[in-house]
Image (cartoon, rainbow, N blue to C red; front, side):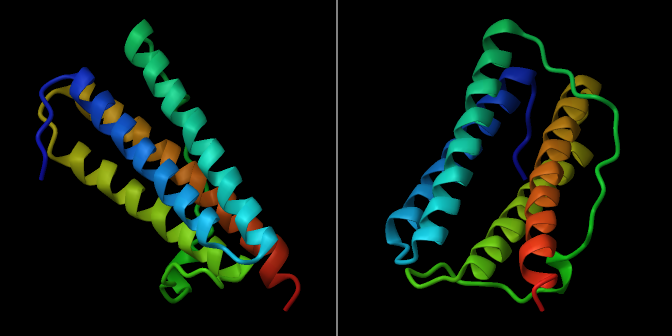
Length: 151
């Protein structure tokens, strides 16, 4: 498990993770044959670009504070089978993939926070985990609204 010694290391890591998410979603968008799925992945990539820009701004300006709030977890992702990325993915599969990816990012930041010795490093990692849980919630709500309600 990676050890961080200061906030800049965390931010550099998080910026890299956001760029990896941009690349991942753009790759899926480029491979997608369905227009709706392509559009969704492009929107996810754009959102991740905004997160990266925000983190770059935080690094430059030195201000990172999130509200101390609990993010609701619908736990939809926990009951869905894993989906492999493919060019012919349906909208439902795209949402499942996005939920699982955000859940993994949440777990990663939470685990890193558990191992952080410095309280400010720990707080920053927990704030990043909270952001990932918000992303997962967004995809769960979308899944609930457009997939579960139709069935």
